[in-house]
Image (cartoon, rainbow, N blue to C red; front, side, top):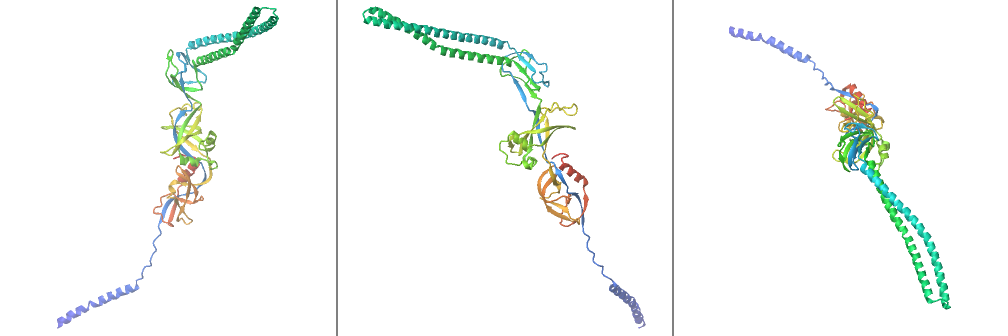
Amino acid sequence: MKRFLKLFSRKWLVLPPIAVGLVAVLLARLSRTEPEPVAPAETVRTLRIVRVPVVDVVPRVIGYGTAEPRRIWQAVAEVRGRIVQTHPDLKPGATVKQGAILLRIDPKEYELAIAQLEADIEQVTAQLDELAVQETNDQDLLKLESASLTLAEAELARLESLRDKNSVSASQVDAQRRAVLAQRRSVQSLKNKIRLVSPRRKSLQAALAVKQAALAQAKLDLAKTVIRAPFHCRVGEVQLEVGQYVVAGQVLFRAHGTDAAEIEAQIPLDQLRHLIDPAHRIAAPVMLDTATVKRLFNFDVTVRYRIGDFEAEWTGRVVRMREQIEPQTHTVGLVVAVDKPYAQAIPGKRPPLVQGMFCEVELRGAVRRQRVVIPRLAVHDGHVYVLDSESRLRRKEVQIAFGQSDFLCLRAGLQGGERLVVSDPAPAIEGMRVQPIEDQALAELLVAQAQGAGTVK
């Protein structure tokens, strides 16, 4: 019994601490305060921006083509003969002045032909003079024979009257009648001879004209034995030497004019359209004459030649447009000219613009005043992203007038001065907060390209 009481008393000893612990836990729960809910922090994106500029835009376009001389002379022998003289500078690459005698063909054959024809002309001329004198003599003789005929006819009439009176015999009358007939024959013969003078004169005049034409041709052939430079030129390929016999139609040498060089630059048609001044965008005729081309394509033209780290430039002008559009590339050939390319040469700095140089041709149209321009990379399927006054992302639709290089010129959508996002905002959430970082280098490049600096792409 004592043992049971002792065990029971020990169990009750652990109950007070447990009760105290339970009370402490309960009090802790009752005194605990729930934490207030905290709103999640708003995400802020960091994006690059530029201030949309309004500048004077210089529309430009680039084309490429190969330089060719404006005039290429192929010297061809027009007469046959042996070459007796050549110009000392008649060698490939040499330059010769206009009018310089470059080549002589032996002229003796043509000088002899001229002498013979001149003698023939003198002979025909003498025959015409003789015919004129003979005609005058025949006219005078006709007058005399006509007078004799009048007298003979009068005598015949007198004898016939006497015969009626039986004063003369019939034989006398017949004899006088024969004399009258003979005189009439003589007069008629002279008239026939005079009538033949005109056909003979025409025949001699025709023969004279033939001789004179042959003389003119012979003199022309003689002149063709001397070949002169028709303009200032640079000699190309030469295929002759002194003593060589040449025939008519044989190519002797080639030369290139130095007064101007031409480049046919292939220009994209859609870009060329934006280069034309809006004031000149009229219904043009199908066949563009020179005056129309100059009015429509009154561009500033710069021709560049690059090889390695070397670059040379010339100022050119549009002279004509080719007659068709390239169907595969949709480009049109504009021919630009550079005047006096040899006179503009500067040793070590700018060579002459010669045949075969592959050149870049830059065309600049009239300045478009106060236009809104933006970087090409800022446009996303016809819209851009800008920041409002609270630096929140907003989407705006834009209309593009034309583009070149890395920028676009707008027709509508922005007014200028907006903060334009030039980073990729994906995912782009309308109204999200943005921490803007202004890209000054891109802004300066944008303005520079719009105003005509840098390379056109």
